[in-house]
Length: 109
Length: 113
Image (tube, rainbow over all chains, first blue to last red; front, side, top):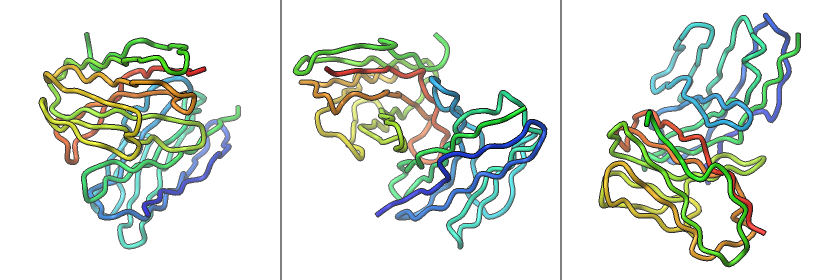
């Protein structure tokens, strides 16, 4: 079966750095997405990786290793507004997104 | 309209009733999707449409139907609602069904009693 695993919840301190991991087992791979979802709101796109390596976008970076079925989202200089759920999703061989359950990130002052 | 809109925002429905959730996008995206989101689970695809006039079944299609008469609209119908269909429903769209980023509507919170 297809599976996306990510931690249920993480806590970090304002101004710090946090890494959210995602491992996947899917039928085929056509890219990995990270979305941010604030409570009661819609998911919003953060990043997309299809090749191995690190993609940097401001305070957020995303890393992919296809051979290991592994990705992480790195958030630097954490702000209170970064408190949200972070969703990892993999596009499979049918070009459908398979979603993880999300990681709830709690930022403490 | 800017982006994707969904209606209603929330709804309480008696079991056995018929309900249509509406979704409209103004980005001229070819592909549209319906997901449900339940606590502790990832988003699950209900139905999708790669282009106007075509639809397909996702991971959890039973009890739901869709139509895609034009590019902009993609309604989701529950023919006879059951309590297990209590969920938050998100509509999304993308320029192409392949690797394009999906953009989400604000969601509909549905409670079936």
